[in-house]
Length: 49
Picture 1 (spheres, rainbow, N blue to C red):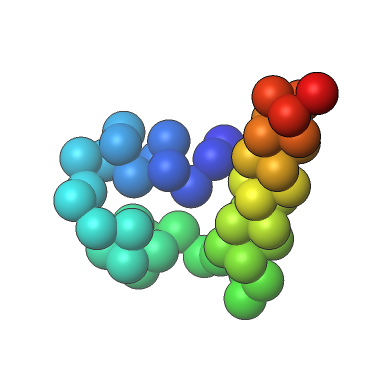
Picture 2: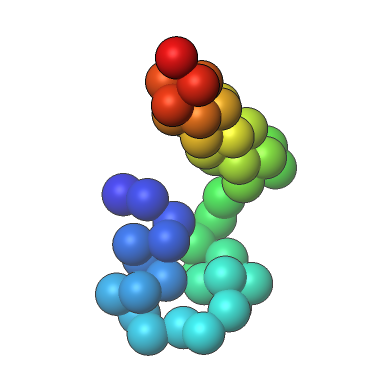
C-alpha cells in the first residue's frame, strides 16, 4: 500500500506522523519521489511534441 494512502486512511496531517507507525526503508521516500519526477517529466515531454 502506498504511504500516502496509509496517511490518508489514518487521517494524519503529516507524513512524519504516519512514518512513526509504519516502518519504511530509508530509501522508500526518495525512490517514490524520483519515480514521480520521472512520470512528470514523461508527461511534460509528451506535451512538447
